[in-house]
Image (cartoon, rainbow, N blue to C red):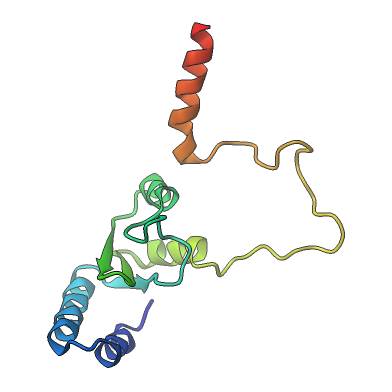
Length: 139
């Protein structure tokens, strides 16, 4: 989990407006009471294109797993994801923090399918595929 005290110290040191920094620290404390397992996701690959929310893939993954969670966006540079369950929080971290990165192998990488390395569409692509298949059936 993210050390929220060090996060609050960084906010207090870097934000020029003391009132805003104090309010942000109070908000972080209140958030941690409601969601006891919190990760700061500032540098994770979970942000949407506008940097205002989570990517559709991340939201779909969270819904698919059914974890009670919350995303807290603080100003334009800070993001917290909170969980009630430590197992859910650690599963989220393993999946989205970049901890588990593929290591390139020597030589040509193994490909399970010569034309497409993916066997199934991503969950957020399934409704679009169903709509395309319905249109093809009408032709």
